[in-house]
Image (cartoon, rainbow, N blue to C red; front, side):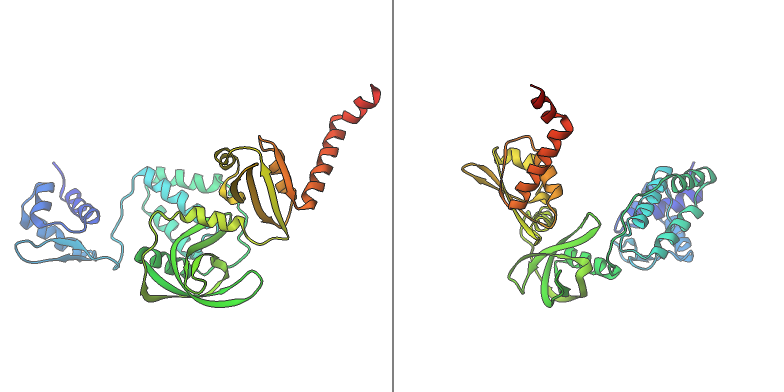
Length: 323
């Protein structure tokens, strides 16, 4: 037979799991009468848990949202998952107050049994994160404001500083947020440019929600659009390469973040801007299809030097001289 304490906690779990539940339904589930349910509700309310009661024949109980969190009970696996998540948030420098992360870790550890506490402390002592610190500061509130705008389909007003220092103000319909390679991005419809635009969050210098709403396009791929925008970021060189293969095969070899792919008569044209050519040269050499560089000239020269160096390393010149 269940103890009163177990039943009391079960009532709390039921109210956490469902938006609302009637007294008779709670009574049926924990096998007590409705008077006992009312007594349990009063006990929980006396503990400071914000339970609201709706009177009448169809009345129900519900937890009031946004007041404060009720006590939580975690399984061992859930506690480990929460700890790992908090550690990752801290080490990846997510835009969350560090004090809030540390406070959550301490509160989680405080309610753990001793065996589980040792396991969690072992995770913290054993794991090392090799993470590059983001070079730019990001306001915590920007993530919260943007994510709420995405969920509620609400337009925002933002003030933005471009990569070359120009500042603009615009109305923006955010479709989503992406974290990629240490940076946060948002993509959506820019009313100033009358087109889809991608913005880096660390370049936003002002942000507030507006009362205007919007409807996002159906099946819009937020991640794909952000990666495509990153690949087309202005650079010192404009790379154009012909891949003698099919578009499907090229898409398998080169992810969207690498650049733009376009089907052509001679195969597939790969384009992207670049500030450094070394990594592009290495990437092209590793492609499993014939490749022809159209521009820039500097990339062709770099590949020739790499080929000559590879021949010297392999001793090809020595063998040809001895024949």
